[in-house]
Length: 107
Image 1: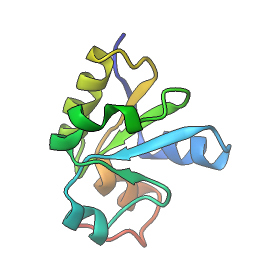
Image 2: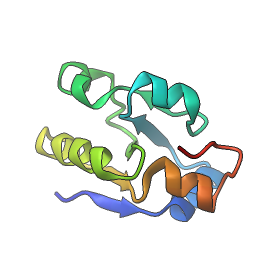
Image 3: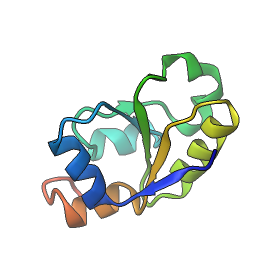
Image 4: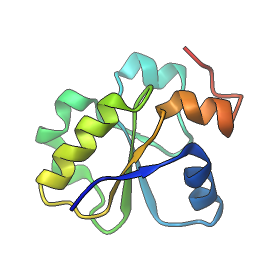
């Protein structure tokens, strides 16, 4: 299995179509408090291995970070751990703010 890349626009379309998504934000708590996608769940990157059981395996998991690097690491780890439907938000929360929701602060 490979990790799918999802653009901010593609994610927005999936959300608008009410697809069952688990939005996994792997940034640090301070980053999450400052800017986040509504409905996302914070599990910092370094906590993923201990918290795998918290992930919704029956939904597509979309992994989110600031610019897409940490989320790619997390998504790769999830696929190696046996999860099948994993996507990385290309460009991260920054791309989301630019392309989809300018009310989300950029940093």
